[in-house]
Image 1 (cartoon, rainbow, N blue to C red):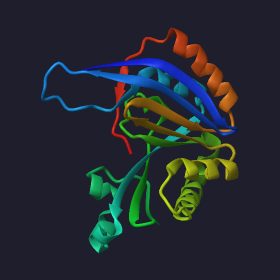
Image 2 (cartoon, rainbow, N blue to C red; image 1 turned 90 degrees about the horizontal axis):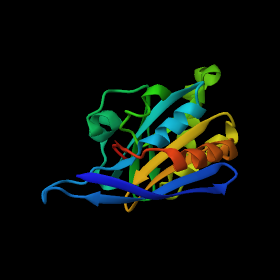
Image 3 (cartoon, rainbow, N blue to C red; image 1 turned 180 degrees about the vertical axis):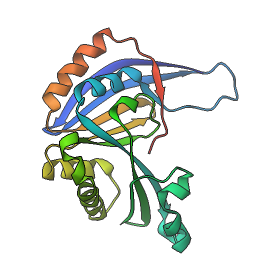
Length: 208
């Protein structure tokens, strides 16, 4: 399978929310190929060049209908449900008829271009000791939602902790990167410059 990207658009949706998107075209070489989710690799390079003094944490999520949750799923947490190595923190939030299991796993900004996660928290290294407090506040924000929306949780988090940033990748008919930060203007400028000169190759991901 070959993946082509085109028509990159960089939009400021709010003071703290930046949305980068582009069209995705899948070219199948064999009829039995499965679709792999991918985003342009240069997006990661721009993020890495901007958040050089930040620690990065991957966020993983598994949502289940409330009727399918029990003590076993609670015991497994997101790590057991997704067959992942156990990370630093985990939690569960209830949104409408679903239970959302969440986990936070430490990585590094240098590994963004090889990470398979779909969402991330970025914490300045001088504030890394606050990560548990930040994570718990994020869980509180998510639990207050009537319907699951990770971006709402991120936006509330960045308002309370203005030095924190968050990333959320997704891919369907288009590839999308949402960036929640108090530096959206500077980040937007970097993306607009990079989109004109980058050689666009795919980065395959495991999306939330």
